[in-house]
Length: 264
Ligand SMILES: O=C(O)[C@H](O)[C@@H](O)[C@H](O)[C@H](O)COP(=O)(O)O
Image 1 (tube, rainbow, N blue to C red):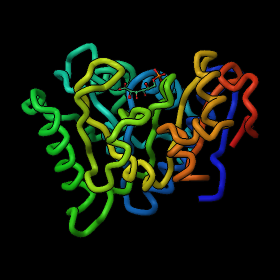
Image 2: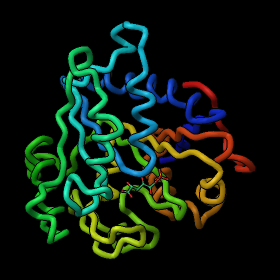
Image 3: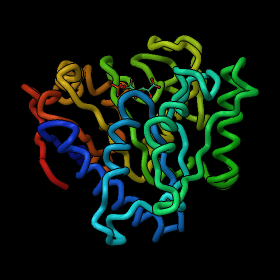
């Protein structure tokens, strides 16, 4: 890819949120201009909370600073195979943190694509059916090789995983399927579905949101070492170059040698 990812660093989440908002709304605007909707994939973890902080903030009222949720189509970059009202569900997390708090009168309502509960017992079936949902939105598999998300909003685990793509896992080598199942996730719960690495890399923009001193070691590895470049987050950096942006904080980047900026 050649070009490096953009790394943005802030004193903390409160300072990061307005820039994340600006970034997401710029992608929203560009996507609506391109094709009338904004197709986003989101992860679980700490992301929904930070995203809510960014998106539920009071804008300045201009179109460029207004979230147009009616145009949003939200998918899950990864999901746990549990009922949608289960404490482990990424859908529930997003609903509790963001969706339920949207002022729908003012900002509209996103179309959300959760996994289908009837397939929960079989992770592979759950993944296949989720892929079918993607096919129905992004066009038939025979007409597009990969779905094109306008924006993927992802986390970075302490081992360098992203979505439910874990270090050295065979799923990282999958080149055909759009959505994969995993039954031995090292992070509980074990049964999950995840977008494949080629789908992530194909995204128009990819943003990692990861903060706190707990990320220091893994950031050092990802940004400074060969080994780290082979971890799932490192592979996204390598494969998607400057389509990737990292929204992080000074605590996570302490002692990490990577060029960073404090604004877009
Ligand atoms: O379903 C999941 O487990 C998440 O999608 C996962 O991939 C998460 O994004 C990372 O583990 C980072 O989590 P934090 O943001 O909490 O560090």
